[in-house]
Length: 369
Image (cartoon, rainbow, N blue to C red):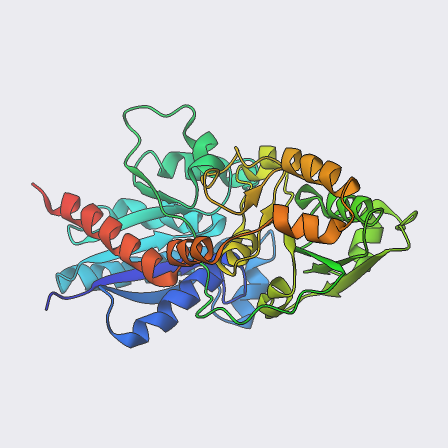
């Protein structure tokens, strides 16, 4: 059996962010021993002291420099053992590490540098964009979405290395039974508080629907105080609408499965992609998703993804139907077969297989004379 490829994932710190959760899932899944990749972490800030330094403008370069030295040593040792190794730099500060140690590591024949883009260029820290711009012109790049990352390559030339897209997986092992549907329409919004995710639009849509039928809107990821601080007090809500701010929730799966529709209304001019992780989780669980514009997505032709223009059509139908809630559910839906297709597309096993092929190709190209 061929030796697995060692994959060193460079991250800022051990946290619950999207990139960190993805890598943690890969590390945990490899315990089955079936994969062709051996995943490991390398944190820029592995302890409380370095985490504090990383958060200080004056001293943040210290843990970044120390991580660069440590990574360089690891890469040299791995190269001496002749083991195929891919070093994936995930986040903005990690790209700074790649900038520092890249000139050394890139000359090692058995080691490959890979730059990972988890964000659109518009949402990326402005002060570090030039670093990432320079890196994607030297090294292979993995993008989580064509739509979200295309602005990184608008001025691309033949000098830019291979760009590969691999969509984010979701860590849902097996779907649970969905709830018994009630007469109340159940909606959900998931995400940390940031205005471009448009929680205000989610409440406005729920409020419109409440003019036709009772509606319950769960907002997971932040507290009401976060919303009020930015938008002001919530006024003029229909009496048939219940809005519940749930704060940070560790396991959102039961909430999603207890919902008729996920409201995923992010501003695509910033995010670049109208389908986020929460939306992928929802679709893999058989719960449809409403976005502003499904055309701004790598998943525009997949089932269960609806746009605001679809909502307007359904709202019109509901206003003329004697059973508006049933009309809504018959309009926004995912069949069991469609759910299975989403589950397969977003599985961690599928992601790991794709990543294994991508890295094997990258490393094979490195070994060519």
